[in-house]
Image (cartoon, rainbow, N blue to C red; front, side, top):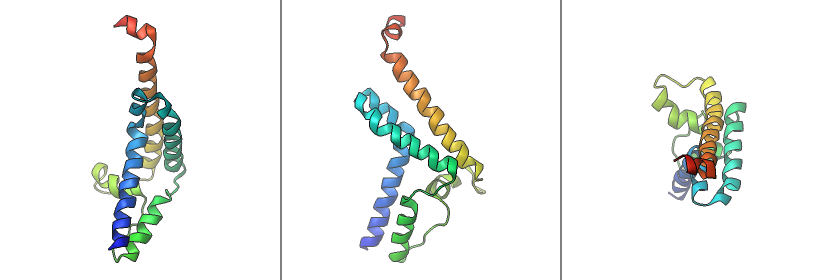
Length: 126
């Protein structure tokens, strides 16, 4: 029971990490210092996806699931949980690379928008 709960907590942590990579730039609107926490998350997420690495949380979750008698999965976290939503017939490896590039581009747009809206010129244009 404890190992299953631990596996579920790792799953939630993993999901929160992915959401932070995608939407964490918005935290800079509230606390500008947040950028120093968020940028390493973006870099890590992008590198893991582009290089085809397995995030360390995936094997940890799998070991905890197996130890609790549950079923583990062979693919990575994104493949296993998000792939079926986007590609019901299977997620190709190139989609991980696209995800890595998308994380960088999306966050670049968010940070660019935050910078633009925070400049006096943007405020005067409104």
